[in-house]
Image (cartoon, rainbow, N blue to C red; front, side):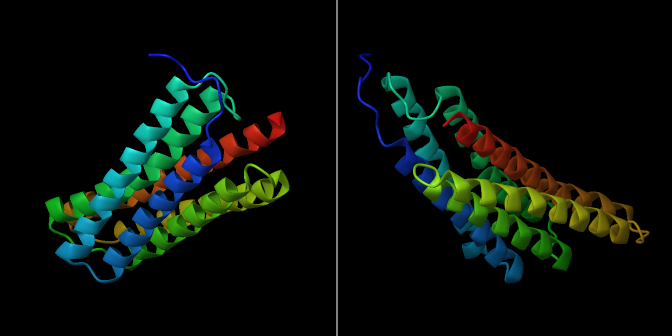
Amino acid sequence: MRKRKESLNFYSLLIRQMTVIRDAVAALCDYCEEPSQEKGDFVKIKEKEADAVRRELVEDINRTFITPIDREDLFRLSSSVDDLADYAWTTVKELRIYDIAPDEHLLRMARTLLDMADGLLVCMENLEKNPAKVSEEATRVKKLENTLNVQFHQSIAELFRSDDFKHILKYREIYSHMNHASDKGDFSADILLDIIVKF
């Protein structure tokens, strides 16, 4: 396949991808607040939509000689933020499999993850022209990862006050998805900080 010589607007693609990912995490919050089949299914719809945008971005990278951002950084950033949507859907899916309801701990972590997704979206929106804003928001996202990590350990500590072994195992797995998602958000912020240093 012939490669394009011109630079496509990868900034717009990143914004579009992150917008869908942010919406997937917001949908998870809605589900945690009031779980229903429809709200759970909507998380899956947004996760699939995020995958589609990512495929489009990867295809454009492969067809283009010139990219405004190092192509390896583009791949890493797109892949890392996509994991937030993946974990949102995995959380809903496994809540259904384990036949358990989202609790206040999960909702609290999901809301913090949404704050991280909002910050990453601000980073994408400012990546082309305002690196200072990217640095500010990426740093805030990294602090939110620490917040979610604390929330995760608090949730685990309370969970282990129960004597119900099955209950512990199920919820520990669900809480872990939020913790792993926050790690991906933190990693995405690191990539963004690396990118603006190279400008």
